[in-house]
Image (tube, rainbow, N blue to C red):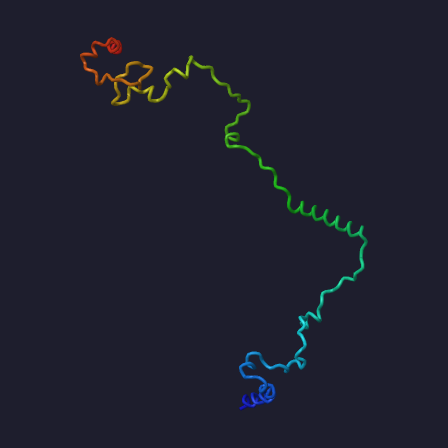
Length: 175
């Protein structure tokens, strides 16, 4: 019953305003003239907190002289640089040393190239490799005619035996 009486009191307070417009418009936009009597007045963008607590204003007059301000800025800059240098020292320069230099370097060692043991011509001589030194151990290799060129083309395996005995080079290799 108490809720109904409160509702009736509310209806009584706005009964004059309810009859001015349709019910759907009132539900959507509310009643005009309940909070502010002057409906033509504009809303100010200032809240009560902004109006009560404003930012402090400077006096508008220089408090220090120009030289004093410049001196203060210069001292602040110098002190901040000193503190920064003390708190953040530069890292030491790294010592660049390779593994070879650190492990294999001996004091007083001088590299000397040895003198050649025999005369060699790299343009005409056969290269010395593992296979050229061990050609006689290789299985399935054809007969070698000369010792300096063991891997050149050799057709003695397809030459008939009768022709092979006639070849003087073949006879010299056997002896």
